[in-house]
Every structure is written in structure tokens, then in C-alpha cells.
Length: 154
Image (cartoon, rainbow, N blue to C red; front, side):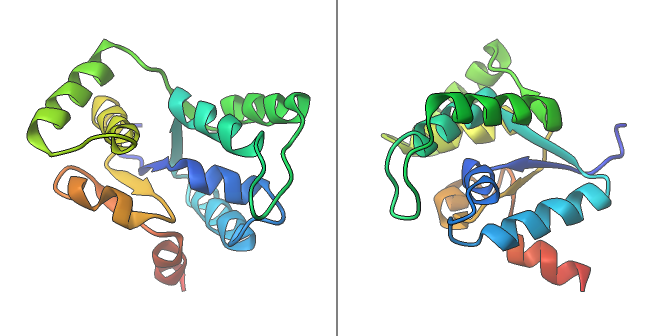
């Protein structure tokens, strides 16, 4: 297992793959199918699940809010279909270290926590539709956009 490819999925990948009316829905599905076919270990965290629930249960420009039962059902699906990195003291220690090394504040702390989780679980790559949000952490992780992965496969 140590030689397998590991990729952490940003919450925007989960949202777009699971909401038919979301921008880049088809691209999200396509990249996830490709990564599954390549037997890539796909990781999320407890934070990812919370963020997903927060996004899909409030109005968005591309969707009406999901009812709680549907949103919870999707979260349970994620738990059974992705590897879920729990929050723990190692993640918190990595987060606190990152915050002292890289100027970060406000909502960016959530992004730093994703990077800390990746470091704690030995996940080198992040798949996201928002690579700019993680640019400050580029020395610590490899940032992948879905279109990059899809182009590599062609």
C-alpha cells in the first residue's frame, strides 16, 4: 500500500461531483472515474464532510439547498467510498506549525488545515478547482487541477 498514489480531494470536487447543476459537474465525475480506474487512493477529511454539508444545505447560485436527510445520506456515502482522515492531535500540531511558517489567517486557516491533514496522513497531492487558494502551500504539497489530470490521461 505504501507505493500507491494518494490524492486528497478538496471539498469543491465533492460538491461539483454530487450536484448535477454545479459548474464542471461532468469534469468532476470524469476525473474521479479516471482516478478510481487508476486505483488512486482518494482521501477526504472530517473537515471536508462538514464543509460539504455547509455548502449543500444553503442556497447556491447553481442549486437549491438539499434537505438535511439527503445531505446526510451523501456524507455517509463519502465515508464509505473515500478514505477519511480523522482530525487528531497530529493534524493540529501540523496546522499550528504551518501557521507559524506561512502567513495565514481567516478562512485560509481551513485551507491550512487541509494541508496539515495531508501532511499528517502522508498524502502528497491535492485535487482542487481552486489551485490559487493553496498556492502559498506549494512547497508542502502538489496542487492538481482536474483538467491537468484529464490531459495527462490523453
